[in-house]
Amino acid sequence: MTVKRIDNVDINVEDLDAAVDFFTELGMKLEGRMPIEGSFAERITGLKGLRTEIAMMRTPDGSGLELTKWNSPAGISAEPKVPSPNTLGIGRIMFAVEDIDDVVARLRTKGGELMGEIVNYENVHRLCYMRGPEGIIIALAEKIG
Image 1 (cartoon, rainbow, N blue to C red):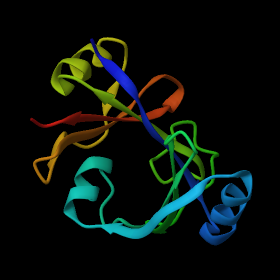
Image 2 (image 1 turned 90 degrees about the vertical axis):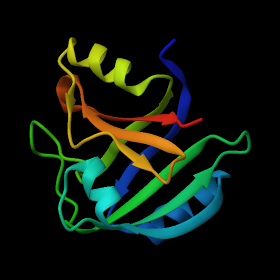
Image 3 (image 1 turned 60 degrees about the vertical axis):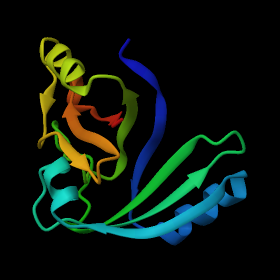
C-alpha cells in the first residue's frame, strides 16, 4: 500500500488575510497561523533562506487546506514551465504514505524527482517534496513509529 489519504492541500497566496477571510466565509475554520522557517523547511523544499507564514484551515469533516504566504524567497508568478514550491497558486498536495523510501523509488521510475531530501521532522514524520509530471509538486509524509 502506498497512499493512505491526502493530509492537506497547500495554496500559495500574496494576501494571507484575504485568503483566510475567503475560506472562512466558505465555511472552513482557521485552525492556526504560524511562521515556518529554518533548516528543516529549507531541506524539504530545497529553498535557502525560506521564511513563510501559514494558515491552517479545516473543513467540517477535518480535511485540511494550508494557505502559505512566501516572504523569502518571495512568491513568484506561475509562468515558469517547471514551478518552484513558492510559485503562486496551488503549491503542492501532501499525501500520507507508508514506506516513504519505497514510494520515492517507485515515483522516480515514473519521472519523479526529489526536490530536496527526505527529512525527519521531530521524530514524528519523515517528509519530502517531489516534482512529478508537468512540474506538479507533491509532498510525502510517513508517520514514524
